[in-house]
Image (cartoon, rainbow, N blue to C red):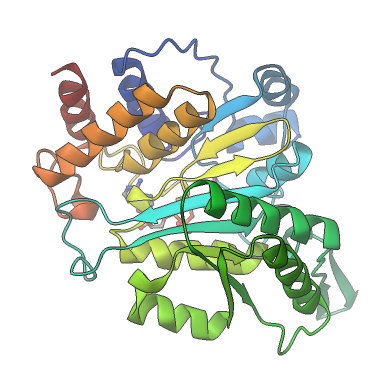
Length: 330
Ligand code: NAI
């Protein structure tokens, strides 16, 4: 368990309480990671965090603040690269009874975002004063494996369509390579419908017809941006979970960041991290506990029992968590 900073410790504690209330036996090993520790140790990934993840191979992680336009590099990007957590998987689903601008349609899509390269390679140079380049790296290996993950998931979970999202009309080489890899993998899965959308059009279609999307397959940057857009369709960042999956390790974390505007106020919605914990339980083979936790969270929404302000309620992080735990114990 990496609580992180900002609202991280609040939602991490809530998620751990909910997981424990399912009755599943998890020995939480807590690895603190926040900007104060990073600055003190002078390392983005201190050894106690990496050693713990290397040993347990599974993590539930709260957000960690990254300084903007300077300061240390992103912990999250570093962690994903270090453990080669190449697939970022983010299910975006309407919650029962939750009123949003889009609640008249049923939204149920899963985002597969490549997690290790693209513009997140961090290769930036000031060529001469006031002229900066930032390198976008796309490789066949990384594109093929994220495409495989998306199609394999589609075929094993009964989903029917994968949409690759790109800007290959402009970045003909980089996004062109990504698309060629997606097409290659699509041919291996003839039963799964495959289509492509340019990222600007995809953004508009997501708002106009969100119910028509099934699985979205994207390079890193578009995946990051489209994830927050998609979160906005189903109630915001407080409700969308995620998983970073590699060959040997998996780290589960919400789409949202450390939310400094509400940190420490008891207002953070722990749903996103609780649903990330559900993904972790499934990964660990604890299917029954996972199903019970999803059902408890959904009941609290359906009955509007103790919702946090971001989703129209007036409860607190603890109030929501108490309601979920009460459902699990009932
Ligand atoms: P953010 O996701 O932290 O917040 C955006 C907005 O959503 C804010 O108004 C916030 O109050 C709201 N929000 C987010 N999570 C919420 C929750 N659980 N319940 C209720 N409201 C919630 O994005 P922002 O402000 O752009 O980033 C803040 C910091 O987080 C930055 O340092 C950024 O680098 C970091 N970050 C870390 C991530 C990670 O650790 N995986 C992911 C994204 C951002």
